[in-house]
Image (cartoon, rainbow, N blue to C red; front, side, top):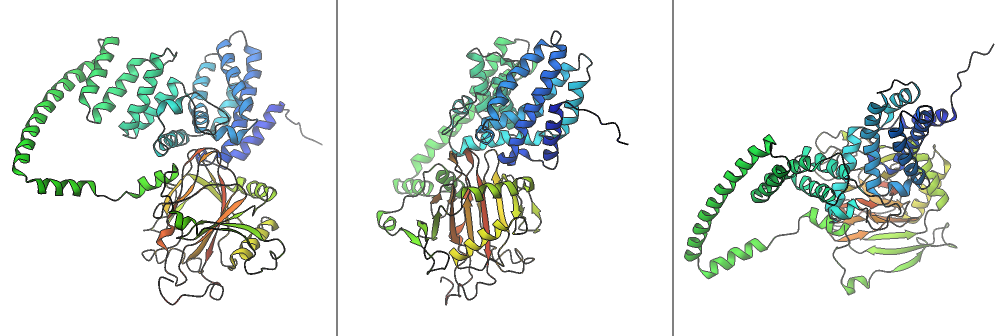
Amino acid sequence: MLGTRMELPCWGFLLMSCLQSLSAHNDFFTSIGQMTDLLYTEKDLVTSLKDYIRAEENKLEQVKRWADKLDLLTATATKDPEGFLGHPVNAFKLMKRLNTEWSDLESLVLRDTTDGFISNLTIQRQYFPTDEDQTGAAKALLRLQDTYRLDTNTISIGDLPGVKHKSLMTVEDCYELGKIAYTDVDYYHTELWMVQALKQLDEGEESPIDKVTVLDYLSYAIYQQGEIERALEFTKRLLELEPEHQRAKGNLKYFEFQLEKQKKTEEQESQKEAQREKRETPEKKEKTKSQKTFSLIPERKKYEMLCRGEGIKMTPRRQSRLFCRYFDNNRSPHYVLAPVKQQDEWDRPYIVRYLDIISDAEMEKVKQLAKPRLRRATISNPITGVLETASYRISKSAWLTGYDDPMIDTINQRIEDLTGLEMDTAEELQVANYGVGGQYEPHFDFGRKDEPDAFKELGTGNRIATWLFYMSDVSAGGATVFPDVGAAVWPMKGTAVFWYNLFPSGEGDYSTRHAACPVLVGNKWVSNKWIHERGQEWRRPCGLSEAD
């Protein structure tokens, strides 16, 4: 005899199936691909909410307006989920909505005791993004702002290059970014975003955040950066709006005292400087000046310049030595009749790109296999050797083998045929999807001499070479850059790049230090194969010197 079966509305089945796919994952902000599931979850929540509203419409008019707004948003977003979340503001606002604003809505609905919607929302919240996700998405926006030199107004109005879904930031959004920066003791970004929030309030935007609150954060952030006079100006403006604000009244006196003290100190320093200049000879002053102006560009700055497309330009002579060709790898049987297109990307280190090297069907299959396996990407701690997450690597990755699908073996064989290197000792195919502002800061793929046990457990030696597939186009950002030499390789769907990490002697090529630039707009999918030394003895013989 069959037991009684509980019947659920249609949206209930859709929602539970979606939540089951989310339950195994966290760190949503580190993968745009997995964040698309959240859009469908949010859309189902809106459907549930509208069912509830139909029963309580007269009492819950305020909730109905909320649902209508989200219904329009999710309807647009789910038509092109990856394109929608490719805009970093949309990704941030999704984190903010699910982590903060839905909780506020719950409080509103709980004023009237109900069953349906509240019970569903309470159950579903355990699968929602966390504070870490919201903070991660916010910090990604700040990172993009710095790397690509974007002003706050450009981000706030959503005017980013290559965007499909423009999204405006509200006063609350700007305030939230400023507050997260403030919590992180980042007063520079606190100032930028509180100024933007204040600007939008001054322009008449309605918001539950008032000018007094914004000015309170703003004046303190500016003071912490040493600009006492500006901090004093904003404090006076705050007191004009709320004369009895106790903290502002105390700050006013303190800032005035500090400003007077600063002026006296500057006068004394000015007098001392004048005396020093009288004693110094012209030759000594020139020597001091030249020492100050000579400095190497730090790696971080070179990395960000390359990400913006401001890298070192090759001389015409070097450029003339780069070629494109049809390549069959010394008449490899698979490519004699159908050689592949190969082009030189850089000369030292030698980086080549293979065009149309992986089909759309193969790329979609790889993504399909990888998506349920994606986990937060880790790095190996150089001291302990333990795998751990890091703020400078924002992505999720999965590992695929021929046991997952025979097509993976086909891809591995293709890499072997084109490189001439043994794949049996290579690592599994790693698939990576980058999150909001996804990046991987400068690093080496090979183990250095101070990391003798880097790949000891594999027993296959060091990483001799890297093969990297680009499985999506990226609207803006996302380049692979080599800061030491000034090379920048831009994502191009269906292509792959290849370079050697080691010289034939087995010594590491330190010029291969590279990084993945933050994704400004778009969704970046890559897959890579790390090829190891063992098995290459006859395929790539050792050189006679370390430099070979």
